[in-house]
Length: 104
Image (tube, rainbow, N blue to C red; front, side, top):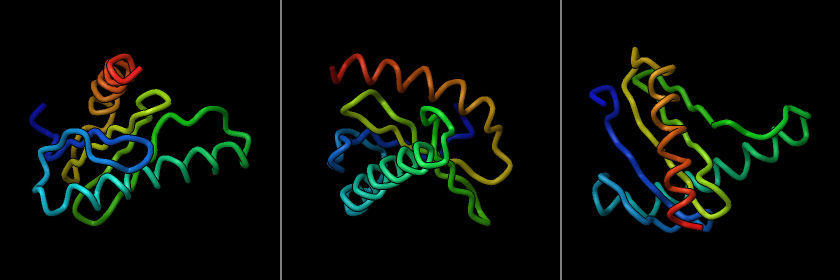
């Protein structure tokens, strides 16, 4: 998908499993993605929003979207501002399901 600028698969413990990010950033990014997912799940629970779909962080220059990939995995995707988030959600949610099966 041309709108995606980076992808990471991490464990829910914050360990990088696969990424196209620079190696120097992988460990930190994996830990932050796992933390964002855990915090998002807790916020969704406290606010009675149902199960978490994803966590979206929007900055001036783009997005980081973090998806749950089952009980053991996290999928994080980066995209530039103006990217089609609907299409990214569609593709990433399907990928997260496949990742969850692989990690089960």
